[in-house]
Length: 386
Image (cartoon, rainbow, N blue to C red; front, side, top):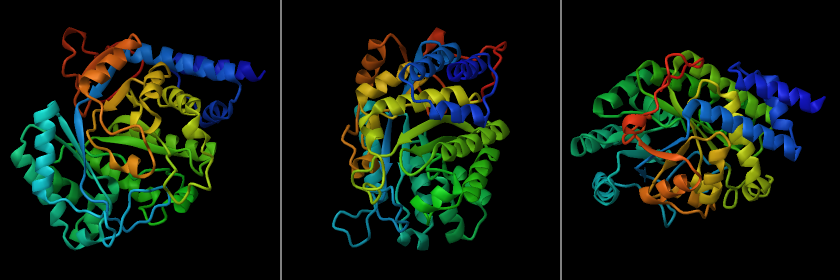
């Protein structure tokens, strides 16, 4: 009976019907090894139907502009105070130097700008606007992917402007898109436990919807493997899916396994998620089956490792992420899988598992796909907006 229920759910997803939250909970709670293989196989089949054998990647560079932060999130190992010996706030010249290095060495198409919520910058909101303007002036063709909803909230307070006014001004300075980070887990009670000083769920949703309404695409994310329950994850994913139904403003979904080693939660969580990547593979597969309005599901090689990221390509994942060049947030939490993969390495890894690597830009336009560019057919029963 149990497996017939699972079979019914998998057939429902494969036939293009949307799974409900009860279906999602059944998938989360399934522990039988053979049944989990069936979930992964169904996700792989669905992904092949949607994306054929294509696996995309982006040539980019992360810019972590400050590690000084006043939020004290319990899942974070990156945060420093102003008095910390290794605290930093990059000036514009240093940021431009990093971008130039990325352009010269690997020909980056994107920078992803993220950092701590530095209390000093609350007195200087111009830092953010001028940063974007300076980068755009020096690199007119570069895609600038910057500032989470948390930073938009802080800018709104500091500048005394609405969320829409802040985003419009950033757009005018040269912002192209935003990371959908600061989401962590959107289930309110768990959110209060792991990041009590961050914006609440209602505010995060309002800022994301505002960005989408203004034509600013964002990613969508979840941090999983900490204190959350399956119902908390179901709440988070249901909310994300409903926003996508309403706005079609998310470009991708990125699931971020929690790295606990150097965080205050390290003694309060089950570290088997980090050590047993099969749990991550199952989660990726469930995302493909449940998020029927997302074309792109991204793996996270800095968090689960390169070999595991490659394996996830058979679990419903169609995007390998980026070259990064630097990745300080995962590393600060105890991640040890590196900060950089060259484009050549990514291509080889994808090809070794029989997939077709395709370089993309931030909003999933394929750059080198040529005649095999993957456009959704007019007759496809699913509608994707990317």
